[in-house]
Length: 600
Image (cartoon, rainbow, N blue to C red; front, side, top):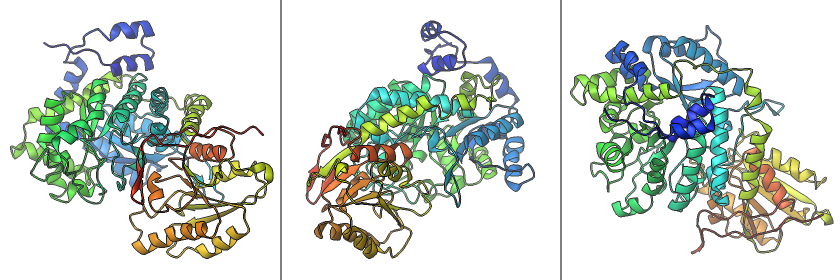
C-alpha cells in the first residue's frame, strides 16, 4: 500500500479544527496517511450505483429565505433525501441565512454535503445581505475584497495570502468548504468579456505567485482552494456562458503562458482544478471543449501535470459545454474525460441518470466513477464533516465581516489604485480651492451600491459636490444635460461601473454615443477625470480623456480607496498588471504614475 505525503491543506484543516498545535501541525506534514480510509470505505459499501453517481452531481443553491412548505424548499429537500446529491454550489445570500440554510440541509443529509462557492473576491463576493429597496439600506456583508487584478496592481503575495486566509475563515464559518478560486487565467486578451479583472493580470509568473499565495492562505486555514479555468480562459474574446471559445495558440505558447499558473498551483498542493469550456486545438484537434476532452482532463492534467486532486467542471448549464452535444451527452463525455464533480447541471435527476447510463453504455466503468466518489468522500473526511458538519450561528459575528478582515480589504484597495494618465496634472484634486465638482456615476440601474461609497467620501472634502447617475440600461441617456451641468463645474469626475465594452447587450451605436460623450467633454475643455471601476481597458474607447484612474472594481473598499486617492488622502502607487493598447501604442505592464499623499 502506498502512503502519500499529508498535504498543506490537511494540516490546515487540523489547525482550523483545533485538533493540534502549530508544532504538531508541522510534524503532521511529514506523517504518511493511508490511501484507504475506513469511513470512506464504509460509506462506499452502502451506496447504490445511482447514489454513487449522485455524489458527483452538485446543484446550484440560493441563500434566500425559503419557507418549509414552499416549492423551492421541497425541491431542495428532494435533491438531498431522494436524489442524495453529494454537494452544492452556493450562489448568493445573506450570511445568517446561508449558514442557517446549510445547517438545515446538512441535518437532512445522511452523508455530509460538500459546499463550494465562487469566492474569488472573498466570502462577500457571494455572501452579502444586499440593499433594502426603496431606501437603499445596506444590509451588511461578509468581507468583500477588490477583484484579483487589484492584487495584481499591488504585486503583493503577502496580501494575497491574507486574502486567502480571511476567505477561508469566513467561508468555513458560514458552512462553505470549497472556494472556487483563485482564477489562474492569464488575461492577455483585452477583449476578454468574461475574465478581465477576475485575473491577476497578463504576466504568467505574477499570476502563478499571487495564485499560489492565495491557495496557501486558503488551505492553511481549513478550506479547499480551486484553480480555474484549466487549461486557461484568458486569451479569448468569447464568453463561454454564451458560446464555445476557441483558443488557437500553439502548445509551446500554452506551456509558456497559460499552464504556468496551474503548474505552480499543483506545486502548492491545490485541492481542486476547475475546467474550461473552451476548445484548444493544440491540445485536442477534435473540436470539443476541454471539459469534455480526455486529452485535456486526463492526459494533460492527470498524467503530464501529475494532479491528483479533484477535477471540477465549470457550470454544466453553460452554452460552452451544451452547444455541441446537449446536456445528457455532455455529462457522459465529461465523466469519460476525467471530471470528478459536475456542478450546476441543467436537470439534477437527468444528470444523475446520465452518469449511470454512461456506465451501462460502456462509455466508462463503475471503477472510474468510484475513483471520483472516493475523492469527494475523502475530502469530506479530511474536513471532519462526519463529526462536524454544522456551524455555530452564534459564532458568525466574531468572524464574518470582522474589522481586522475589513482592514485587509481596505489595504489591498488602497495599494491598488493606479493612475494611468494625468496629462493636465489634475490629481489629486486641489480641494483647498473649493472647486465645484460634478460626480457622474455610470452603472447598471440594478447596481444600487455604484457611487455610494465614492461620493460619500468625496463629499467629506467637497461639501458642494453635485452627483448624477446614468444607467447603461437606458437606450438613450441624456448626455446633453450632463454636458450642460459640466459647464458650471470646475472638475467633472466620471466613475464608470459598467460600460458598453463589457456589456454584451450593447449595440455599436450605443457604444459610439457613450464614447462620444467623453470626447465632447474633453474637446470643450471640461477636463474630465475618469475612474474605471469595471473594465481597466476602458481607455481604449475614450483615449481623449486627460486623466484616467483604474480602481479595478466597484465594491465599497475600492470606491472608498479611489475617492481617498483622488483627494490626496492616500498615495497612488498601483502598477498596471496588464498592457492597454491605445490608438496604435501600448501602455505597458508595470506603468503607473506615482503620487504621494497630500498634507492638508
